[in-house]
Amino acid sequence: PETYLSFGYRSKIILAELKQIKPDIVFLQEVDHYQKRYQQPLIELGYDIYYLHRKDKPDGNAVGYRTDKFTLQGKHFLDFDKDHPYTKYDEYKQGNGAIFLSLKHIETGKSINVLGTHFFWDPRKEHIKFVQMYIIMNFLSANLGKDDIIIWGGDLNSKPQDNLILYITDRMMPKLDRMNT
Image (cartoon, rainbow, N blue to C red; front, side, top):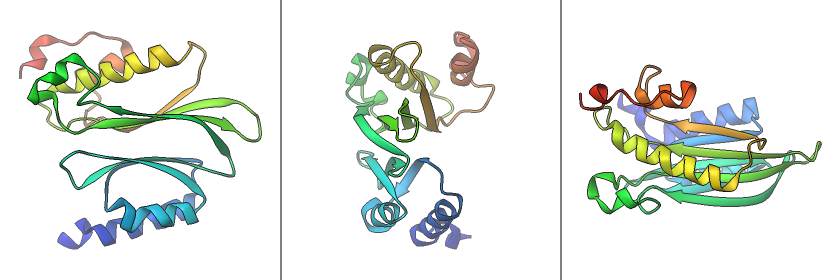
C-alpha cells in the first residue's frame, strides 16, 4: 500500500528501530528528506551523521556512528560521477556515491574505517556497478593499509550470483557473457 512508501511513515519506523537497537554504526540508503526527517532525530539518538545527497534525486546516503563509542579521525565523500575517466560518458553519471569515515574506538583506541554506498540499480548494466566498485577499490587501495579494518555497508543492488558480488567475495573476474544480458 501507498502508506508504507510515504516519507513520514518510513522515517518513523526507521528511527524507532535505531532507537531500540542502538547500533554503533548506521548505514542508510535512499534517505528521503534527510534534513527534515532524519538529521535532528539521529543527533538526538547520539549519532554523528554524514549525508551525501544524490544529484537530481530526492534522496541520498547517510553513514553515522554513536559519539559515545567513536571519534571521527577523517572523512571523504566519493562522487561516482567525477572520480573516474569513464564518468565522462553520460551513461555512467547516475548520481551515486560513497561516504568514507575513519573512526577511533573510544574504549580500545583502535581505528576502524567505514564506507557506506549505494550502487546503480539496473541489473542489465553491471558495467556501471563495476566502475563504481573500481572507484571505491582505488580509493581504499590508496588510503588504507592491508591490516586496516574496513566495515562496508550499503545497497549494492546485486544478487549473490551477480558478477559484482562474485568479484568481491571470490575475486572472480566478470563473466562477460552475463554482462551483456
